[in-house]
Length: 54
Image (cartoon, rainbow, N blue to C red; front, side):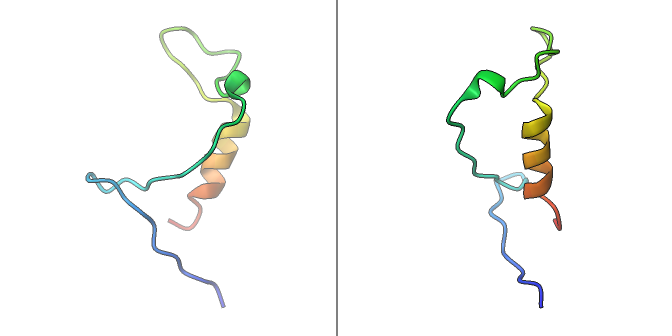
């Protein structure tokens, strides 16, 4: 049986994801432009996995 957990949400209804970043040197993709930051694929994968089933 799958466990259902209640997700914490902000005042606009968005899900809050708690994460600890120990080294942010690769948080943004090396292909990011200064005016348009893009998260790295590893961070994107973590966020995607954290929100599955929502």
